[in-house]
Image (cartoon, rainbow, N blue to C red; front, side):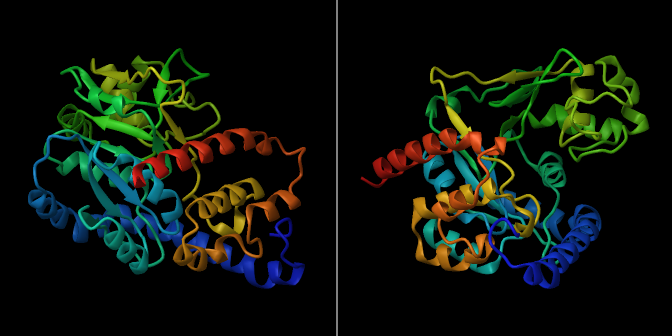
Length: 347
């Protein structure tokens, strides 16, 4: 907060207490949202909602709408329209944000997940809701993932032994394996649903491997202290479920493209409170706001980056020794590609 220009008293008396209270509340609220709230208020409603969705020849993709992310989401949706059967899942988004989406994309169905106020359901528990109850295969795509190669959507036909198709992957430093990243996934849902029921596991992150899954995880080299992500001390979203699936003979397929950058992903845009965002993260927020130049978003989201008002302000405060600023050329490339594609779609 000091780096971005707030005074010491404002930081100590306002921003730190607010950020601390939000953090404590969200940790408590997520435990309720992923369990009792999910079962009581979302499960049956989602089943009914899904039954009302029209059939489409396009692959169905769910896009989770997080609060304070519309400046990232709107370009994402603009690129996807006509390529996928899109369904929005509001996960803690404010009423005005939902209203704006309905106005801008009136033909996109939206399901509002019930949550504890000022909180969102953990990503893995949202995937659980979909895997346990969705009829047929489906995909998920992050609100800050931008697909430039439409040929990606022609490959979404998993074989019987392929439980998951993924566009992004990362090589593990712990075992010889490339694991999928959750930015754009397409699920062969039925095999995963059966494994969830058989082993009593889900897509959520796990601090410890559930006893029912330990033997299967060990078969693929993932013991109690071995993780696909060596920089984590927990099993991230989907890792336990996919580990068990691999041990049971299922496969993960990575999608291909003729383009060097078929898609680009920002990441971290909905994690944590804006109080603790780094200057490079705020710079990216401001670049997206400037890309859209939307008066409503500029006004509603001004507090996210305050007292900064423009990306140039963030650059003026930056420490060029911080390696995070090495991503500036990548951000410039993304902005250029988005501006070109969005302009072409408007014509």
